[in-house]
Image 1 (cartoon, one colour):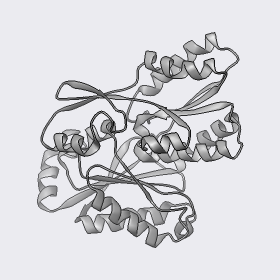
Image 2 (cartoon, one colour):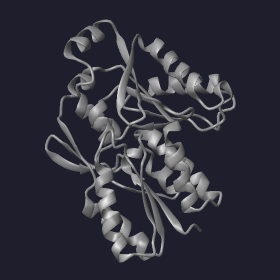
Image 3 (cartoon, one colour):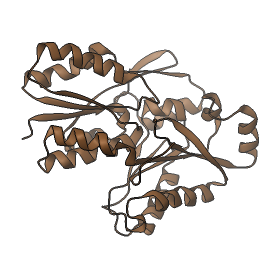
Length: 295
């Protein structure tokens, strides 16, 4: 058994079963739906399909990050067990939750001077952040120490690629990522924006592509361009989706056809309620290890 704990936030968008099977601990963000507060608890409080139906019907959402007290409550039991902690947070380009985690770690450090508490900015989100955690669990299970794992992820986290497209522009208009005029004409012309995450962990629009069929081909082409080993990519691939499973399955099928050496099937997860509050329904995201992200 390892002498340290791998920990993250619920915004890593893996299933509860996946987190448990890999022995990855998580702490939940919060969200409000029409003023009623819920935990972002991997679809337990409100099933994902129901959540996205409510969002599509116009119910207002608001998200809240994990606070210092919650981080203390999350970390302290592991420290009491004599465990060190490596906690990875949602990207600072999307949330300030890392500040709460660092504050909690500093406060606990005074009471547990012999324990290590490493806080890492994932510079990622959703199941790309989840694929980082899954990879760290592989390293831990292979016998790597907490220091080795910490040093590796700090050196390699920008090699995790995040590519997104959406067939519903309304939430991208609402969030200011595209203008109302762009959204109107984009909807009329069946434009699906292709976005990725830059090296500071911000979600950036990259290209406007007409029709869903073309954007599915293009997102897999970006994987071919950037994946470690190109068409010989042999790592894992995670996909997440917000109430558009058929689109995600089409991406997964094309990935598996294009990359015959892929490590297993392309795993499809839900975009959780925190990230989904900002993307809305209709978003598909593709994640893989590759060259270092730039700009």
